[in-house]
Length: 99
Image 1 (cartoon, one colour):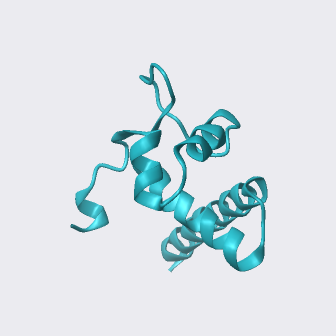
Image 2 (image 1 turned 120 degrees about the vertical axis):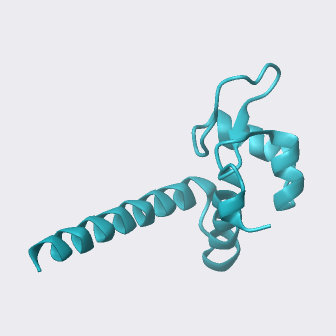
Image 3 (image 1 turned 60 degrees about the horizontal axis):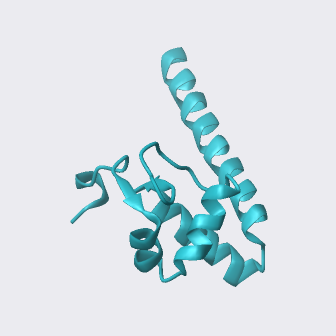
């Protein structure tokens, strides 16, 4: 199944996300509680997170493994990368309009 076929906003439990990325459920809960990963409304006992967090957590794990960055640092890095990508898209659109 392609990523485009998935509903990236679909809420998942922390247990499902943890199993998907090979992490402990307690880690996913802690990252959600600390605001390092996005959460959505509806969780009773623990926060729910959108499906897109799976990709984010895998990237965070790679940053930890490859660069020895802690989770807070990895969250900042991913936020900055996302902002740069957005700015690049906006710049490309502006350049296309000027042609």
